[in-house]
Length: 220
Image 1 (tube, rainbow, N blue to C red):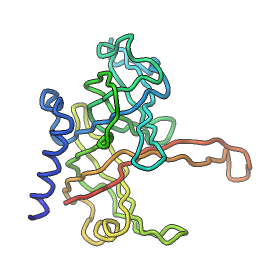
Image 2 (image 1 turned 120 degrees about the vertical axis):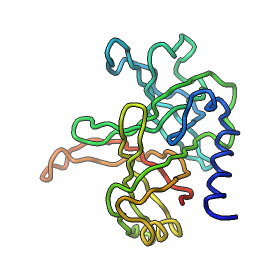
Image 3 (image 1 turned 135 degrees about the horizontal axis):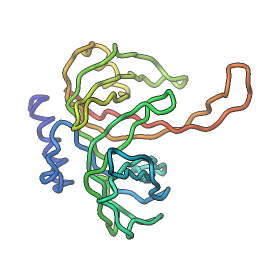
Image 4 (image 1 turned 135 degrees about the vertical axis):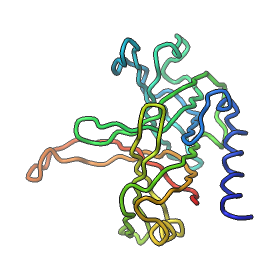
């Protein structure tokens, strides 16, 4: 099986796990999550006359940790059923925007429904994108290989810049094979992590911030 055949097989797996995407006309940017509402929906902003609400969905991994995914939803898709601790399935696109000087990534929801239980495939992304900046290969203090990658993906309302991270063998492949302008297909999941941000270089005070990125399982 070639790499492209393998990627096609994974795209078909995405459609099998989230068959509702057939009706949402999602093509080069598909994302689906199953999780629990951790922070309730609140008004975020307006686009023309449409109110956009945002919540945080807690998505369990196979390990003991969870990812906390920001989700934005138009008001017309919401109902009174979507309360805190409610399990939901959300389908849509992985997008980004500039918020207070830093890049914010979120799931733009095109469909949201309640569900009774979470299964193993609860955080999946398929993207067709272009490499935006040169890959950065590095090692963690514990010696794990990592490549940081920034890609651009087209969406319904323009382009989104998506930070990605590849690990171990995929990290080396991304560093060796990819360059600015490379067209790639990516398969993975949206992961969150927290870090401490100082208020200034001379200050010991700061705040805990959360960022999200695409963790690459495979690419071609």
